Length: 271
Length: 264
Image 1 (cartoon, helix red, strand yellow):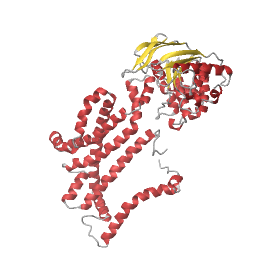
Image 2: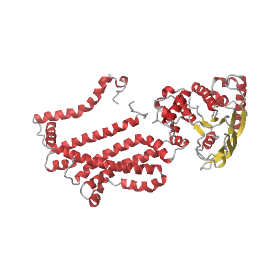
Image 3: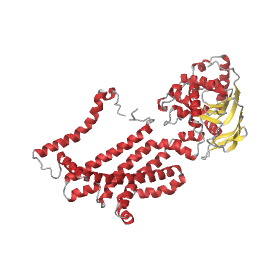
């Protein structure tokens, strides 16, 4: 999947292009970080509110040495994984049923669209009353955030499956279940992967909201802790951890789906 | 297996009458071509025979068995190949054999692919095929089910002239294997005469059978022979009359191959 574009398109040698492109993307953030580091070292700023990279690195090292970093990361990842799993299961199931059955869609979809209009954070007080202040309410909030993009993605994808392809299934006299497994599911898979990635992104967003509402561990707790104790390096370290984890899980999801999507014939696909 | 179409009519929900009083009996192994101006309901007729749609009047029966939904003995090839893009060519061809043992499926798929000359494409994705190759895979996917009736809806109309002639000959060659009944809808008069034992000319609004013309020529048919030209002239004349034109020259057909230009 790392095959470079043809040399004629990029105007570069393929071997060069392979390294040149990521390097170009890194130039801006790395350049800014180095510039800031130099500025602080030379005394242009004390770097107290905007810590230079060396201080952030030091913060990371200290948190990791104390085992704190691992503890917070594990707590947050666990919440996201459980919430994402529940939201995905519910969103996929309901989305598939609503996409397949017109009656169910007419019955359920308007209510769900109504609920979708509620900003998910607004559920926090209710969830705390219903589910307590511990893990259950946090996981529930994440699951709600993940549910909607996946529900919409699955339903929309099923509704837009090419009628001509469905007819092929009818000609071969597939039963309802066979039609779903052999025609509809493979046809919606590309859109489903996109929906999953959108859901995962929202999962990471909502885990912070959930952890803001009162947690004793987790990266969100680290953010609040850094704010209350006036430790900007800790805040930036937590933000960086979020960035790395978010990107890594998104990459894992894409990589896991890639073998099932090799057939795709689309703009931007790498063969 | 005889295919009986009796007094079939189709009126759509918007009250458009697509077909009216179509009756047609097709004998086992016969090749019937259905031609007609655009909008005369030829594709609608084929969909009724396939069981994908149901008539609003009359009925379609295969050996007395009324067709109300797709039937295992009736295969169809559409104007587009309609291959499933997520399956390899071999898996597309074997799509209807999912309930058979793996060994039997593999063996039949290999044989059928070989038969359509695409044995070397077994493991490629449909997106890598040319239009003609993809349509051959679609034909293989239908034929592997050993249908008694194979319906073809303008199967070669999207292909260039050379590929089209090639595939017409190829289709006849495949037909000779099991001699299924073929019903071919086409707007290409040459295609109808090369393939068919009988050409059914339809008339539009609402679609009705206007004329039936027997093509009593030995196969393989020589597209340049006088007898071929004569048959073609009869079909063209019937088509002209079906559209209420008095044997005027129909410029729709000038794009077909060189042989057709000779007689006018």
